[in-house]
Structures are given as C-alpha cells and as structure tokens.
Length: 337
Image (cartoon, rainbow, N blue to C red; front, side, top):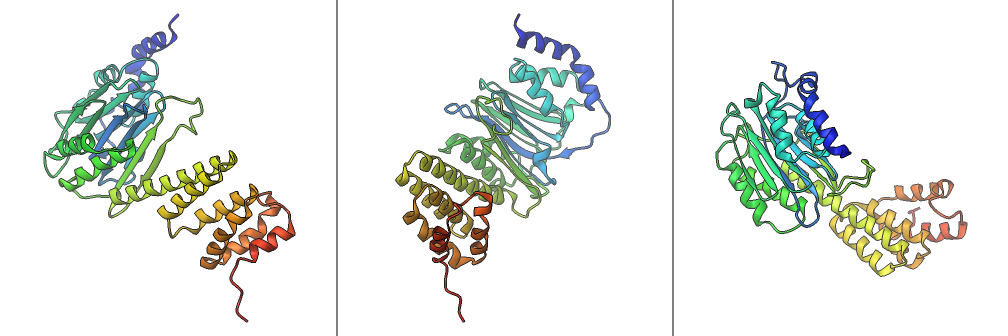
C-alpha cells in the first residue's frame, strides 16, 4: 500500500470540509496582508524558504510557512492563513505544489482575493494572483522560485525581485534578501514599511521539527524592516560561526575554532558576549592560553562579566578550581582605590 498516496487521496476528499472548518469559506476577510514576498528552493542545498515585507504588523506570523523536506508557502493579499498549513499538509502527503494549490483554490469561494505561492521539495512551483487583488498586483514564476506582490507603488516590483534573485550569488538567505531589497528599491508597498520575516528550512527533515530551521527571523514593527531583517541575518551568521567554533574545538581543531571565533567577533565587534562564551568554551577544553586575552577584553569592556564568571562553577559551566578562577579574574582591570 502506498501510504502517501492514500493519505493524499483522503486529504483531497475531505479538503472542502477542512477548508470550511478552517474558515476559508467564510465571507469575513480578516487578514488584509498586502505585501511582497518570495518563495524559493536552492537547487544545490535543497533548502526552501520564504521572505516577506509588508506595511502590516507581524507579517511573518501570517504569510510565511515552511517545513523541512516538504515545501514553503506564502499566503497574502486578503490572506487566508490556512493555505499555509493545509498546503504543507498536502505536499507532505505527496502532492506537488501545483496540485496542492489547485486543490485549495478549488475549495475557496474567495480565491480571487488571494495571492498564494508554493514551492515543494522537488522544486515544483505554483502561484496564484486573484483578479481582485488590489493593484498594483502580480507575480513572476522562475526556476524553483516565485515572486509575488500586491498593493505596490509600481507594477515593476515583482520583475525587479526576480532579476535580483536570479543575479545574486550566495546562499539562499542572501538571494531572498536581495529580492526584498530590490522590491523596496522599486517603490515597494505603496503604504510604506512595517514588518518583515525570513524563514528557511532544510531540504530534508531530521524528524526533529525544533531543529529543522536554518533561519527563522522576524521584525514585527520597525521603520526599516528590510534593513533590520538583514542585520538580524548577519547576527545569525555570526552565531553560526560561534557554533562551528565549538564543534571544531570539540574535535581538538584549535586553529579552526579560533578562526571561527575570530570571524564571529569581527562580525559583531560590539557584542562582548560572543567573545565571553568563546573564552568559556576554550577554558573548559583546557586552552587557557588562548582564552585569557578574550577574558581580558570582555572584562575591560563590561565588568559585570566578572560577577557572571564567579557564578559559573556552581552550575558546572566552569571547573571548580580556585586557582583557575584566580587566573581568569586576574585579567580584569584593577579597581581604582
């Protein structure tokens, strides 16, 4: 028995009732999320993601949906949120993105006010811009991606997004952000800016949903949400270097770990905590010589970390070694009398 096919068939049979129960058939439209967004799959890594900006509070909680090994969905315009979870459920059961979107639209009497895009784990893309989406509205579908927008200042926004995505080199996050930047440079949402989000998942599931997030960041209310989401992505990348440093140190690759920590510190020069926890990790790995300059810099910038350090042995985060503690605290600036 082909269980995914049986499940998909059952889902399609019960879909109209599921959609009605979820509220799609309701005459009340409760989420006027006019926006621009992109869904895409990286053909090299298999990662899938959604990036979005809108003059609407907390746009990421409405528009962006993705699941590792399944697909990604953007649901917007006069948005019906359930296109997200139901679209993923259909793709998880074996339907392609076009099949999933077609089934959902067929069950929605208000399909003409919806704008929805989906990409599945095989790179199939589907997109719908209803005839009653507020102008300027439209979309462009490309190879393993789709860009879509409504209530824009110009009808050139989605084409600008597509060009930016296709021409940008780098990982999926870099390319998604380039599309958002291009939309804003082209005029963006006619009402202005308020929130943004980026969500990226792996091409394959680990079976641990809490771990299947490559990037999951939101800016719910900000004067420059695209700029701020880009800053947060940079912070995220710095912490990824920290994590990589910890892994290299665990393998006794001290030089590799130090390079990763140095990269993270360079990316976040004003964040002393990055250097502090790098120092703690090095100390617990027996690398006192490498750790001490980090402690010295951290304590000089913020003496409160001296007090934090004193509390760590009781929690097992530092060896309960008075001599070692004396060495660490000895790097702090001497208090003036």
